[in-house]
Length: 573
Image (tube, rainbow, N blue to C red):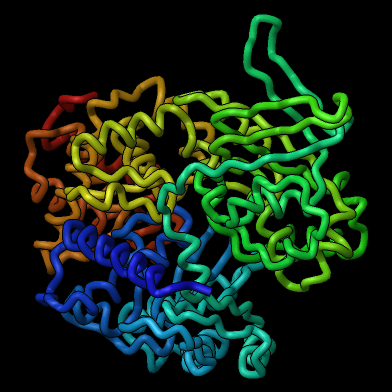
């Protein structure tokens, strides 16, 4: 259960997101009420956490909520019970969101099933393919969902019921069950207890002590002159619960005989702060772990890839005539295996008997490494030992030394470089801009590789086959501030031209054009691009949308031809 302090911390975070929004684009309404600011920030914080690297500007386009659009843009259409829609083309996921923001903390407040029922207005329109009553962004997003569901691809659709109330709605509620059955819809309830664990606050150092049979611990030294040892251990799942729980005394008490006291211990989410993966609510992999724990607990060691721990220090001491090894972990983090860890804790908390009936009878593999400041080997460990639920290449690269260097450099220039969802920088500092690592990569693909036509639909390659070319070989970190400022200048210029529709793909083209011809005013580049979009014809498909036009190689070649005719050879070729 969350506390009043968790509620306050969330509010501060939401205010921070509103401040970032204010610097991202001009807001139509003058908002002086902090409650309104926090409500708007709440939407952005949650959507960023579940938006798979989407930038604030992208997230705004996903929000249908009537009040949000009325305040931000001066006009909001009926949202039909769904406040936001995120479509992930790569993972084939459709995420619907219904938000409820409470102004005051109440320890007894709970989510209600009514919000799910209200959302059925939107899902009805989708499944009946009747959007005649919908308008604006709501209609546009509904049509996008319908297009996905009509395709031959298999899509997973989820409804996220999100609230800052203190108690989650049971998804076994009769109304929820009916909704799931009627619409083939997975329903996920998210309330303050879960949200409080998402808040990225650097934890105090977490330590723990283990006592293992000597045969259950193996050490490894990379070479004879190395003073640093790594370890591989066979650890009972009940011990995993103990050393990662939120009770310091329990973490240090390696001689507990009555394991039942562990049944009430909760996970200290601080151990997952540096985990390469973001929060994963539920997955097939989670279910498989739970099934193994209950049906074949002794098989978990064979079926599971285990947990990877990195620590500032690992001390070992032979005791009991060296029959046992005492292992002290200092300031440790679970680098990989976060899903395994969360599933074990969830399994433990679901029944007080699970700790003694199942978890003490199952074991998992635990790798333990000593980490050093700026140790790129740790980043390689994160990348090479991940293999459960698919992890995006950007998540794996988020721990690389070059990404951390960009974050530090931009931090010195008052820019938040968000390597993970939820990053909002130092609470005591005022920032000018915020940009996600993914968005920065998309911009680099346009301005450094010169391929704005690929920025939106080749995202999966930016942190894959294009990565070294974009971030290492051809990257000058001193250009990063200029690149971010140019991006926001493009957004603000489009915002001032109310008669022209803004699309993120247009920003990549304008940035590409500005890189080639930096002396030409942005408004002139925009005029050129808009003219090219309006006159471009594709012989195979005359009905191409503007978005589809801009991913055509021929369209990009056409832009180059127009620019060359207008300005001659480019300055930055």
